[in-house]
Image (cartoon, rainbow, N blue to C red; front, top):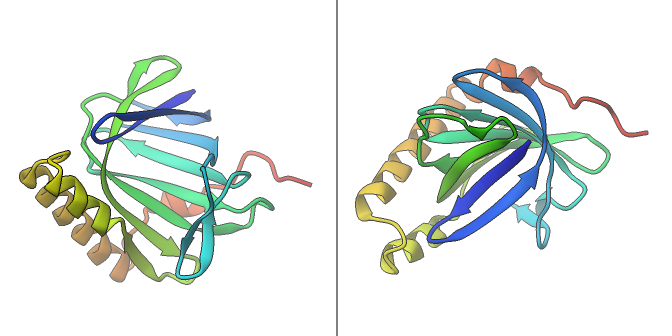
Length: 170
């Protein structure tokens, strides 16, 4: 499976993955994390080449959620992208539709601390008109909603919490 991911205005990237589940309303894709440089939150590396994510992508929702593992496949947290909702999940049987990132992200650490990421990038995108004020407001509304759900223990969903990688590394 190829995950097609667009960062506004026109940065489109493709990532390989293995389909774990595919229904009309949900895709679950296990995928290696591929980044230009390590990503850190509060001093902890949360994403680096060699890490693994199991992504849950949903039809008509403003977010996806990934369960992240380090290079030893130790679970390290959850990552959510705020996305423009899609009406269908697959472009072909082996490609997702283009998932459009709306800049704001949420990191939930192993200990349950939640961090909103990329607020400055959203502000810059508004100034450069890469995103409309209305769409940016939707992104803010949905990140706040996810934060509320995290704070009362209702997010991420139980199926995300329960999933494990297909096979452990030695």
